[in-house]
Length: 221
Image 1 (cartoon, rainbow, N blue to C red):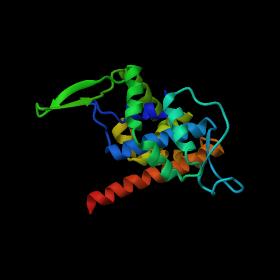
Image 2 (image 1 turned 90 degrees about the vertical axis):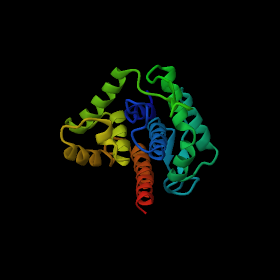
Image 3 (image 1 turned 180 degrees about the horizontal axis):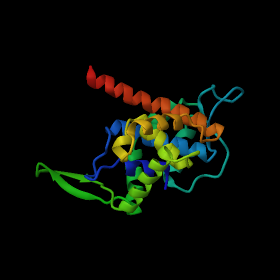
Image 4 (image 1 turned 135 degrees about the vertical axis):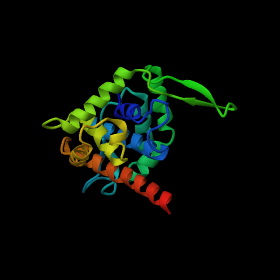
C-alpha cells in the first residue's frame, strides 16, 4: 500500500467520516505522496547548483511508479519543476483524497455506503471494510513509537504525518500518549531516512503544520 493509502485508513473513523478536518487530511495525503516519491528517488529538494532555485522541488530520473496516484502526482510536479513544497502540496491535494479513496475501494480496504442526510439528501461514506489492515497499520505506528531502534520507513512517515496534524491519539490507542508524542517529535526529524527523503520530510512537515496552525488561528479568531 502507498503511504497515502495507509494514512487515509488511519484517519477514517468507524462511521466513514474523516478523523480530522478535511483540509488537514488533504494536505497530509499530499505530503504522504511527496514523501513516497522522495523515497523512490524521484523527487528531491534542490540544493546549490541545481537548475531550479534552492529549496524548490526537483524531479530525478528514474522508472515511473506503477501506482496511478504516484504517476499522476509526478505529472503534476513536472508541469512546473522548482515549485515550493507548499505550492506542490496545495496542487497535489486537489482531488487526491478521492483518488486514494477509489484505490482503497477497488482493493476492498474501504467500502462505499450510501445514505441520506436528514432523510432527504443523498450522501456517501467510506468506512474501513478490512479491519485486519487497519489493525496492522495501527500496530506498526505503535511499534514505531514504543519500540527500540530505528522505525520502519513507512511507519515513520505515518508517525510524522499524524504528528503534524495532531492526530496520533485519534488514529491509535497509545499506552503513554505523552511519551509517544515526544518520540513522534524525534521521528519527525527524519533521522530514519536517507538525506533526500529527510529534506522532503522536513519540507512537508513545515507545510502541513502550517496548515494546522492557520486553521486553528482562523477558528479562534
